[in-house]
Length: 150
Image 1 (cartoon, rainbow, N blue to C red):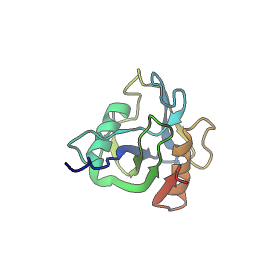
Image 2: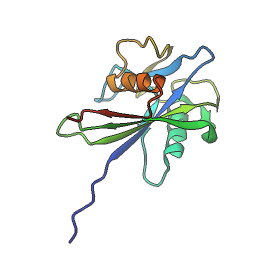
Image 3: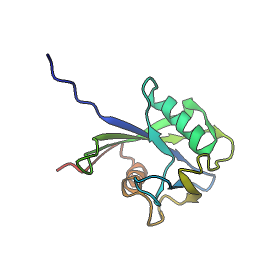
Image 4: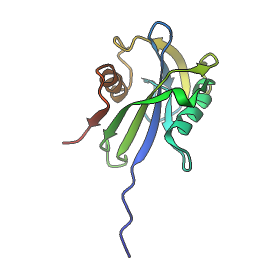
């Protein structure tokens, strides 16, 4: 019997910018992972959906906006090693979202306590560390980043 093939967890992140170039951030709440920190709207891919469909779904759930799928462009793949023994290896897919309809609002109040716009070049100090690193990599024009590998 062949060994089970390795699988990697995948999460999608939306980079939505306002007319001033600021990005929308959400404060995580009601979760044990990075509770109280700011992050981009994001979530895990579900089985049977492609990365863009997952991103559009997450933006609808978290921000109550409808993203135009054709305007979602992969900006960065962040490949991270597990942070601890209970964690998984991840592909974090960061997408810029060029067009959406609706005004971003907190769509999941049990999981989010604040929505704010921030200058990506001067992020608040409590942004999730790998999200801040990813935004900096996107600003430098990088398309691949590695985290936690020795």
